[in-house]
Every structure is written in structure tokens, then in C-alpha cells.
Length: 144
Image 1 (tube, rainbow, N blue to C red):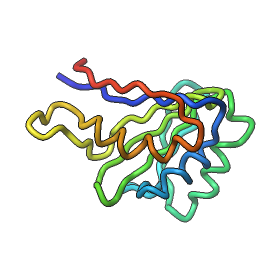
Image 2: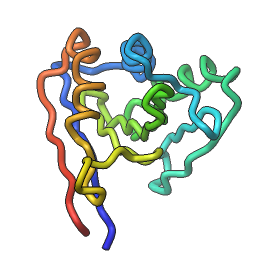
Image 3: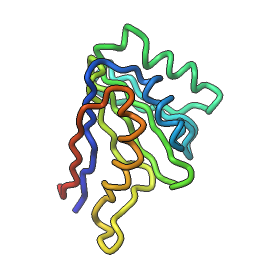
Image 4: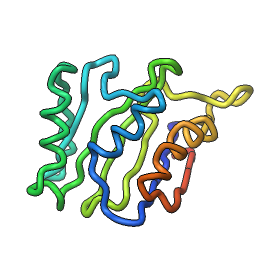
């Protein structure tokens, strides 16, 4: 049995990937994860993720935030090195919604390792995003 865990984040208006990343980096998150910097622009429905070295982070943020990609889903991985966990941030077309999927060393609940510690992720993600206009979220962790 597999699991699907994600947190859907809703903003009052459109946000940029760069602004979200800057807000999160103040709270221990980074674009640099074990594979370098991972990102995706879904212009063809294939969700083709790419990895690059950390010195290309600014270039990658410029690419995912470019006006020609506003109607496409884009993604970037974020990593919390102190907690040794992270995941994918998927920004939906229009950029007022994004989803966080804990894909890098997912934290599980103590005593229930099959379940995701959603409280930890919410505590780590929500406060820094409030100043950016975060107005709501929905967290799910379901068996497939």
C-alpha cells in the first residue's frame, strides 16, 4: 500500500516562486537538497523534473517565474537541512495556489510510521507564508 500526502496552500493573490522561496529560506528551508536544485516546468503534461547545481539557483528561479510559464505548472524542491526533510512545491497556473508534497525523507508520526507528520510540515511552512498572503491550506495523507 502506498500513501499520498500533500498540503495545498491558497494565497489571496498570485505569488512568485522566488518570493515563496525567499520567505521559506528565513525559516531554515533551502533550494539546495541532496540532489542539488531540482525543478520542473510542465509545458507538456509530462512533469519532467531536472536537477542542477546550487550555483544555478537564481537562474532557475528566473526561469520558473518567467511570464511565459504563468499558465503552466512549475515546481521546485525545498529542503530543511536541520530537519533533514523536504519536498516538492508545485505552483499551479495563475500562481495563487501551490501544493507541497513531502518527497524527500518524509517525516512520519512517532508511533505511526506509515502516517506523515503533517503537523511538523504545517508548523514549518505556514508561519513564513502568512506575510505573503496565505489565506488557507488543506492537508491530506491518504492510503492509495
